[in-house]
Amino acid sequence: MSNALIVIDVQNDFCPGGALAVPEGDLIVPGINALMQDFDAVILTQDWHPNGHSSFATSHAGKAPFDMTEMPYGPQVLWPNHCVQGSEGAAFHADLDTTRADLIIRKGYNPAIDSYSAFFENDQTTPTGLEGYLNTRGITALTLVGLATDFCVAFSAQDAARLGFDVTVRSDLCRAIDLDGSLTASLTGMKDAGVRIL
Image (cartoon, rainbow, N blue to C red):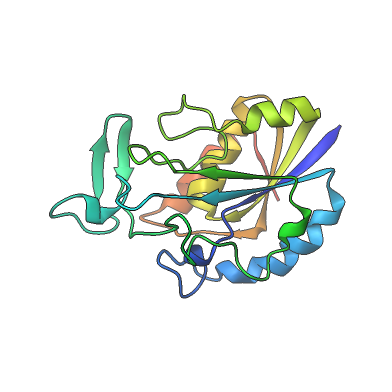
């Protein structure tokens, strides 16, 4: 069984001091770096939004960050502006070992639709190309780490399980936003999808 480590969105804007900081988001970096040597492949994902992305609260009159809105593809949390293409906030955390990356998947670059999952945009149908890459490499087992547990990690893990991959989430190497109980809901959703949480 060929296995890959999927490192989700370990970017400056999701770490302390960033525009959408996840508490203790930077503390997982040394553990992630140490884990990389144990895998046949390492894939990094990177949130990569254009200015004025439709998931930004500033793109909706009268809306504030963390308000909800309805998009053509369903409910959407509105976020502070974050991970804007080419910005320092979109860059990987300086201590993350990017030299081990076989592939970097950029997501959220379509201005009309957000993209939490490493596999699909939030319409749940538009693929990122990651599934095809893993299949052509013969990779069947995935371990996910990164930010944030309750959004991009959880969506990626559930999609991976649905696509037939053997999926493990290392919760010690993830951190959560925990927006209105989102962490508990995401852990339940992952377990229900058949994801192992360590």
